[in-house]
Amino acid sequence: MIFWGWYERTVRGDGLDQRVKVHRAMCKVCGRSQGLAPDLVAVGRLDGVEVIGRAVEEMAAGRPAAAVASDAGLPYTTVRDWRRRFAERASLLADGLLRAVVALGSTVERLPAGEVAIALAAIKAAAAAARRRFGLAGDDWRLANLVAGGHLYSTNTNPPWIAA
Image (cartoon, rainbow, N blue to C red):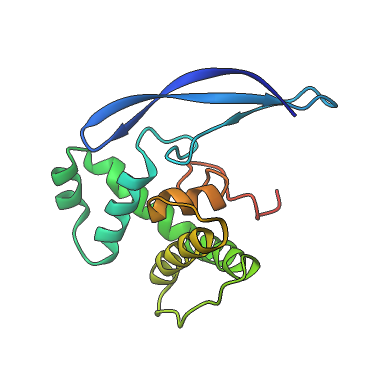
């Protein structure tokens, strides 16, 4: 792989829009290029993973989507979609992230009941394992998004551990 330019995109987070550079890399053999998005970017989403993650956590704790959307200054339909998409993929995310925890040399603590709760626990466990193994710093959501290859909250793509 070689670096092959970059492009800018907007990421919305906590009331402000920020422009980030997404570097591109190209395979010397096949000529295909890929965008190398930073850890705060969820593929296909305008909002940063920390914003989405906090909202999903609040809704999982029982807070209505309308209240979460109002506090964040976001459309209700956007926040509702985050909850729906996360719930649809909760078992896929939990499976891959918990496998990553073990692969990183950590153990998995006792898990709560329910797919969404397990997926949220897996996000925290994967971030903690990445911190311990690689000395990384940062938000749980960003570290888990790194483990998921940018697809923690992506719109229409499954995480990289799901065969196409």
